[in-house]
Image: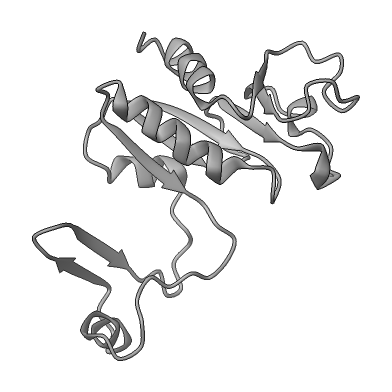
Length: 169
């Protein structure tokens, strides 16, 4: 499976870009999966629901299935967070896995950038970032980069870039 990432600082537009690029690539007939990293202690379950009660009772994993989708929730308890490679290994085979976050992992990435965040470019310090998708192409922040600049507002062009980089087109 091909793996490519989208990274960026908070409010840089990475989630919007990620969703749009997934849509673009899927619309072209490729099978796409996604992995999203967050630093927050999210819980997809809600108190009072059966699956929540199962986890609270001590289940290590809870599978929930319906005619529309299924999911497996795994409680880490005291075990370390799985690596990106471990998570990808749990996915069904697809053409490409798009990854949001996991900035420090060694896979290739596009950085989403907006000057409004006030943050520096990750790309200046990270050789795994192969292009910057920016809403501010004339900005001093992106000036002088030796990697391609893409438009944050053109997800089709970002999808084209990722598909070329992964050899899928």
